Length: 384
Image (cartoon, rainbow, N blue to C red; front, side, top):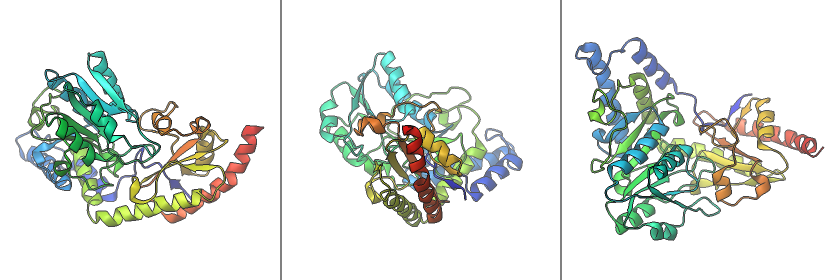
């Protein structure tokens, strides 16, 4: 049996996604900027995708900008809003558990003279709202905080965060990295006070290399890519029609009968947590139910290096992650795990299991049985 539990790194595409990608590559392959029928047909895919995605968020289609994925969306949201608003101030607030596609743009901005405050988190990965309020100052122009942590599944209280920000200064922009949240949670940027929102297609059974950035119409932001003026000048370059169409199909699938899909994934998460809890020497770093994201379970295995266990599972066709696989294939100490205060000896003994719509309870049972067989052997090996 094969059990793929690395859906937070990437997902298998859905059948309707595959079909629309092939169709737009082989039949409706025109350039959306061309004025003939092939071009107009391609342009229609872009417009319909924007309307579909906007519908899932209850925003305007013109507030959706298609990108090459989550990293570009995060870079654009952070760097280009900071640069566009630097006359108003040079202070940015984020957290110590952000993805590299947020952390590294912030590091770049620090080199450009911006000042960044990194908020701490508690043992469950949540920020302290009082610390946030104290960090806001007259020079603050942007707050960037992830919705769902990609390693442990912690859900940040975005509405409460926005209320604090806007009460202190309505002009401060609030960016949310929703790459692990979109498709899993109901998101309403207008009512939640979110000004910018980043999403990636391949986390929701869509194609790789495409995503979008929601930009509220009131946001002052510069383009990152200049050229032919596509997407109202916000992101020049010929649009990735197959990718955008595939993203639209995936979004439509995830938000159709959404509650039922998420309930099924959450039940698998809770079932895995319960079964892992049966095993000695396992520490669960994620919460059950709606207290954390439906698709992510972080677990630490005492006495075994995560890389060793990962490859032992791989030999049994069970695929997991030892961290945030989408950031780098080079191992590093997790800022998230350090931030939540897990024991130092467990920092290099933690795996992430993440679910998608294709996973089953039988796969979880197979994984648990395999772990029960492997763990004693691997612990003896590492001690010996």
